[in-house]
Amino acid sequence: MEKAFWLFKKDIASELRTRYAINAQVMFIVVTISVILFSIGNEKITNYLAGGLFWVVVFFTAMSGLSRAFVSEEERGTSFTLQLIASPSTVLGGKLLFNLILVFSMNLIIAFLYSALFETFVIKNLPLFITAFILGNTGTGIAATLIAAIIAKANTKGTLYPVLSFPILLPLFLTLVEVTKQSMDGSTFSDVSPELAVLVCYIGIMSVAGFMLFDFIWKD
Amino acid sequence: MINYTLKIENLSKWFGNKIIFYKVSGEWNKPGIYGVAGPNGSGKSTLVKIVAGLNSQSAGKLEHIVDNSPVEPELWHNLTGFASPYIVLYDEFSALENIEFIFKIRGVKANYELANELLSHFSLYHRRKDPVKAYSSGMKQRLKIIAAVMHSPPLIILDEPTANLDNEGKDRVYEVVEKLSNDTIIFLATNEKHEIQMCEKTINILEHKRD
Ligand SMILES: Nc1ncnc2c1ncn2[C@@H]1O[C@H](COP(=O)(O)OP(=O)(O)OP(=O)(O)O)[C@@H](O)[C@H]1O
Ligand SMILES: [Mg+2]
Image (cartoon, rainbow over all chains, first blue to last red; front, top):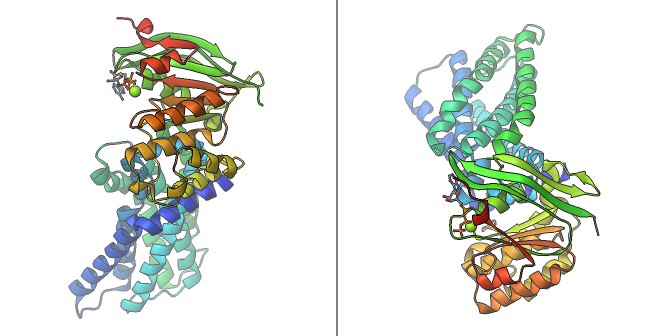
């Protein structure tokens, strides 16, 4: 576990020097939120729409940066080095940690901007939304890490990532949009327990699949 | 010293229907320098990559054995050191940072004394804090050799270890190889005749071809 943590530290140090993922993601957040703001102008959008758009921004922000963890190693040719110094589980652990931190920080920025800029982004049951937010970020981080590991080996990296991610992340995001609506209506935890169960299962399945598949994905 | 043995049995590799090598076997548990020879494109790199676990074989058995029991493939990486021109280190970091991260990610006891000694030996000590992207290709090759041996693994694989090196650099590599060969199994995959002459036993890939 400590080894994975050091791999994570290596990636953070590298990220702070190259700003490869952070720059792309922050730019993406600024651009999409501005475009949304310009296009709605003075009109009031419904709170459901604001909630849906929130997850749209989250999805594409994730797509613009989370593949970095593996693609950058593959592109620079350092993945052999990584295979020579770490076991597959260390690699998966370190990259997952890096992506989770990235997802949480970017999505906090998005949430902050949203609540500041969109009047109709009002959540009645805040603890419920926060729960969905945390589960959603975790699910996105795990799924995106796995997909990144798969596409890093393909040679059409750029376009393949969103294409492959969409079907895999769709059940997650549909559920998140639903829970967000409910939290705007002030529903209680027990009202949305099926949806929350879906989110938890999603995370469970992705984690198990990840640790089972990763050995095969990682080695040629 | 750990009791280490490398054992391969009928190891074969093909890409599609092209056989690269066929039924290579052998067992190594005595320290020394062992060669892998063959012309360009014959499969030297392919063979040593498989031994290091970077690639998988098409058929045959490969075991890294410690104290008479085979080690799980997930743990092979700390039993081996591997250097070659196609390995790339993290060039946004300095030599020292690369060395530290490699020790820590391996999770082995960090032997900075040995690392510093090797940096001096390869005339990189005064450049140890410079980012690797500012290194020449020969300097990078020197650092890769350091990174491959500094955790003192029982098996060290050097694929064209003297590529890009000047005469002084080559001599430095031979010195390290000679010294380590007292307690380490060293594989040398190379095209250089005199490097093959340093080896006590050599696998010639051409003897393992089949149509
Ligand atoms: N991924 C691959 N797919 C198909 N063929 C491959 C692949 N990798 C290597 N080969 C083929 O395997 C053969 C052996 O390659 P290898 O790199 O092992 O040769 P080598 O003996 O190390 O040569 P050199 O002396 O030039 O380093 C070559 O013919 C090469 O074209
Ligand atoms: Mg080669």
